[in-house]
Image (cartoon, rainbow, N blue to C red; front, side, top):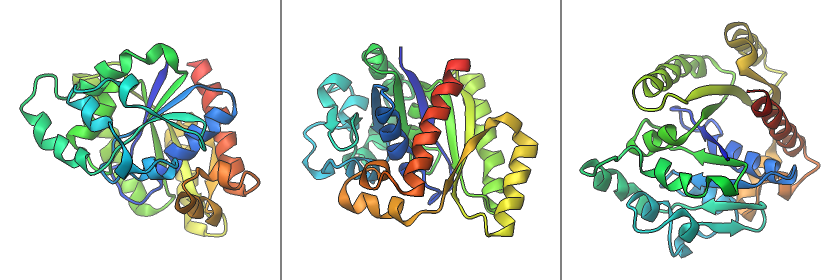
Length: 256
């Protein structure tokens, strides 16, 4: 059965989509069967996987409204080596349409259960807000991966996020837990980043992944070519870090 993980941070611009896309491709490279779900109406994870969001016949929007199954709506990211449940602007309207529906926070969970036996990992890229879309992701997941920059404001937002996860765990999804914190866009030359990194390790202990994703221009360039960074330039420091992170995640999941 698939392990379902949300990549979440309520702060924007912290590398959630970069993390989701490259982790999916990294897991695929290590032989895992992966489904990536793009829950962000911007559709950046879809485009970064080499899929034109404007050309999607069916998307996660149709799955949430139960007019299509995951099996019908998924497409193959040939460049990434994983399956994708894509998103486009239609998804922004789902927020309003879901409000009046039954099980509005459990739609994605039910849909994913139908294909859980076909994958080892399901990764969900969530929007940078606690919306009904994010709630669907959190209600579907076994765990949360939090990408974060080692900066002061990131620490401030982290406490809010942890409280949100606790509330969802208590009220909606008893399986949900924080799998780990991933330090991204890290520059060891900056003293503050090193200090915040040490604070994270002191406070969260083994919840902080050992792998650190460095600030890397090749990772930033990859989406414009419609490829995950680990495929676009496998020898770059960022790509190698994400493959190492994929292996670390598999080990961590196996030990849970």
